[in-house]
Image 1 (cartoon, rainbow, N blue to C red):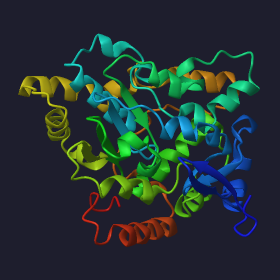
Image 2: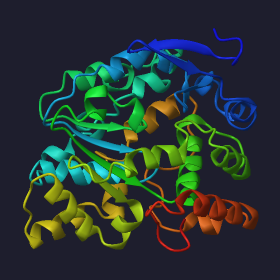
Image 3: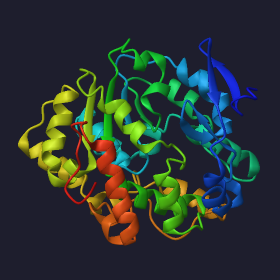
Image 4: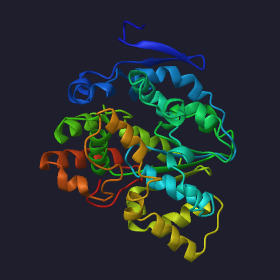
Length: 344
């Protein structure tokens, strides 16, 4: 324990790493407003906000053996991750829609799921059966046959070292989304799956202060954005996918080394339409929502909720619209990255 910096220290790959507590904001505006099952002691691991149970998984994650044919979809939560996963999987698997009827959570699992609180929750609920991809996710991913498709919300600097250092031929598809819409979607996500009872203003405050789980928002984005020229990384935005999905499909297919005809692109775009996605039990995480409902955590709603660009602009108070716009402008200035006008 480092008394001078009020934080604990853990050694990762022989290098000391501090993990200070997040502070009062996450406790007062987030943690205490969750269903008790979902309350955790949050810390920052190399700046990344996670439950302290994450520390038990740091070494297995950092030292995870990456394969040449792995495909990783990386993102901050609620930026179009599920949409991107389904697009990537279908392209890589030659539009095998029959095989795509298998749950996305099984064929494209969430790498660090067990590390961000699911295992803790399962231990509190011994009468409920939690599948391995939820409570033993790192080993579940490890044991998948090739090619593996893997989802993560980890920042670039906490990815497996082999992936960070480009030691393999593994590919990364990153998807980003404007801050207001991400915040609004994450707010509803926490209501649905974690019983969050705080107000939208409460959530805007902790999101803006980079204190929600998986923060920092901008750090996550720019960790990947600055590597967008790497041959094994494709950077997409939710906004460009909404504006021209066919173009995003073609870019992704080229990146994955697949040739699609115009007819195949049209068929895939139809499969990826909002209505098809929302009504598709393989991708709408009904199983996860069901577990949350059985535990008494879930509020009413759907995992795939709106899928719109600019909804945050309409739902936020004028003050939060102004603050998020200024915040986005400050962070995006000079980076070369932009989102659609009025959606920053």
